[in-house]
Image 1: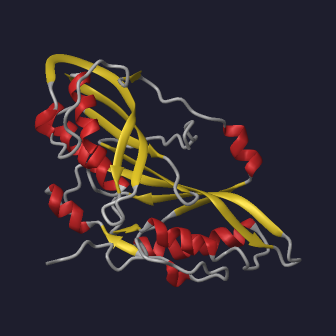
Image 2 (image 1 turned 90 degrees about the horizontal axis):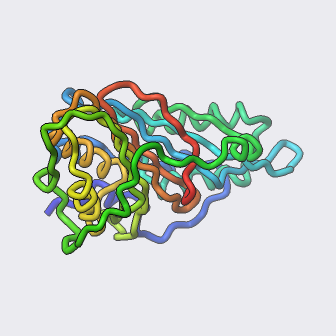
Length: 276
């Protein structure tokens, strides 16, 4: 029986924390396996987008021995051949802790080279001071929150586009929910997130959409793959003129993952939400 593509990654295994720079700690997981399961390939992606990672535990030493702390933003193309596995990413970033670099620019150049090699696509890196991130503030999602709808729930797995309902009314609207939860397919640990949808097309029934999202509660997939599944299911239901689906996930191990998938180019707002 074939095992999960992350089987050989550090996920679910005891790992030593290396404090000297080591690029070999990074582990890539091919996206193609999940793409085939969802019915498309690298040549027929139904969306464009990025995965935005934020690191809140990034530090290194100056030549004087004095530590520096920073917050890192990493933007990985959604069509990159590989996902960067999250635990390997954390271990890799921790390997900077006792390594010496003269400047933010020097660290950034190393990160760009290593992450792009593993993703097999150009990865954008921006390092920020804590003051800069404080100035950005906390963001509130735009649109209508569907979390207060009065629904009765009895199913917490196997989400499907057949559970979504829509009407003939044509609308453009933005919806969001803080109730997205899924589980890591390797460790079973919970992943918590806020989902945001912006679309133009047949009107989505909000109650059916909320019940559909709650079905992810026991679903096992990586963050990126959950968002892609939701995008495809909404596309099948609504056949929209425009569709954008994104999720802001709660950080784990100092990293949060924020996948964006859209039918059109998007301006990414990377300000964190309250739970991030």
